[in-house]
Image (cartoon, rainbow, N blue to C red; front, side):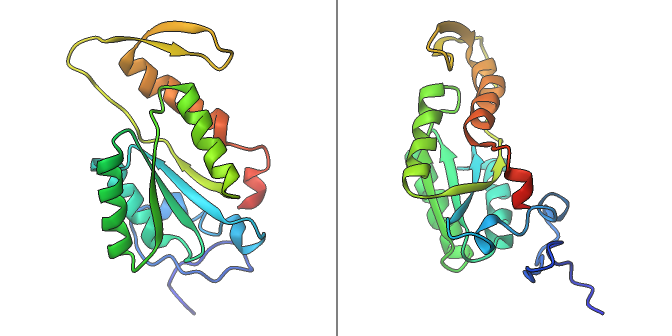
Length: 178
């Protein structure tokens, strides 16, 4: 009897190779790509450094080889450097950076359109992007309905950003995908 945990889906035998994030990824280890022809991607926001990069590293190591990993970052240079690092560490995994400020609905919608245009389906969304400025900064942001509002930058990223990403990428059929 094997003690190596495997994906709970009976048709997938991908082992969980690392203990990091095992509890999170155990239920989503088998993405839609093993059932469908549309390629799948995991999306991790705020993944150019810190916790987000560590999460992205674990996702890259634990994902099946046919799945991509999208690093969503405000700073394209740092994101591209992080992606190159993960590609090297994960033995040529499909990792790339998409520039996006999650506090801006129009940026998130453009990201969704780019991934959709590439025929990609999101199977895992990790909302990690956050900021904590030392002083309050007010910014103008468009809501999904186009209305312009003034909001604290920290709230725009840490609250609206999560909402915008979930509104753009969570699908009613996601649970059926595993």
